[in-house]
Image (cartoon, rainbow, N blue to C red; front, top):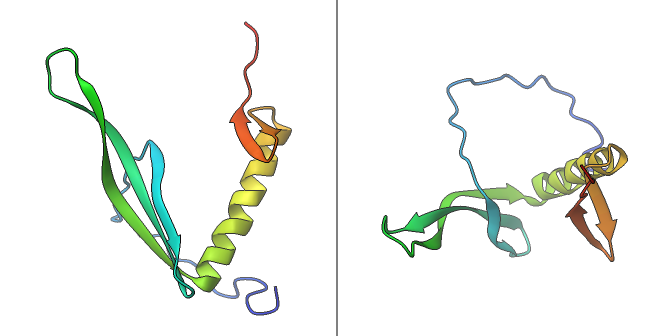
Amino acid sequence: MADHPQKQYQIEPHHEVKETFADQIGFMMFDGSTLKIDFVAVRMKGSTPPALPEGHVVSRLVLSLNGAKDLINQIGKLAAQLTESGLLKPEQGQVTQETKPN
């Protein structure tokens, strides 16, 4: 990529940045200049049976086009590593979790 070949700067860790847990990706949209991704946590509605699951947006990530390209490239590398290690299995353009017999 000519516009962002490698990061030529040091990244400073900020340990005060909070982490957010998500079960899945919710709404995702690219508007031509930014990629927006909602992260969803599934919670049970009510405490008495039958408790029904509900999805709650817990965080939203907004990336510039360069940030979106970097995310896609990094996820591609991660997917290749997980596939190589046997944790993921590519199947008809989708990635599924590899099931191993006990």
